[in-house]
Length: 279
Image (cartoon, rainbow, N blue to C red; front, side, top):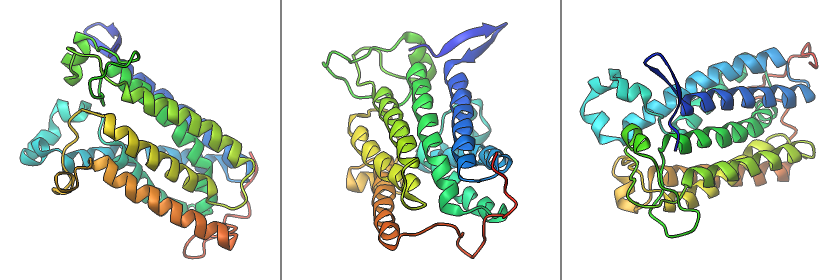
């Protein structure tokens, strides 16, 4: 809708970039607050958050390269301004962050599930704000609709992202943003009442996986093909990953609840440092 906020000389300040920065800041502050409540060292959470941001950016670009034929066919396009400015694929960033978190949480000797629980509400909040940026930029658009909340994007949006402007479209960016705001409120509420470590991040995995799977039916932007699987199953790349994330999260959720896992130890036996101060 409004891909550019203003210009500094000839340099445009993009709405998407500003909202993405706000999303990260908000997510990190929420994580630090929730983590400190459970005795996790605030400075370690800030360090971890910065590394996860970098991992998410790299992961989103890597999955974009995998699913988009135009980038696979022209590897040198990785150095192009178009590739660097592209938003990437959310699930690539999410999975990249998870792998990086596993390595760093072990190194920092933090409890895996408790740390993940502290990050979960912040992830949802950051996602909610970030999708507002998608809406402003005009990316991740939906199919044409006659519903009263259908939106028509601007010509500037079309120039930036290629969004169609000849019809009203499902505001799929807002569908996901509003859902993520609800998830954030629910996860914060649940964090105060959780009965086992891992409950919050696994609940997020189930909620987001199911919601993203449904929203994808209303999306209409090109999203590439994952090794031919999307053509074979008629499901998008994100729907396939949503099934994997949602089902896995649900199974692990019930396993941990049944065993009443305390989550105090990381895989491999690492314990939270006894010197961790409550900030």
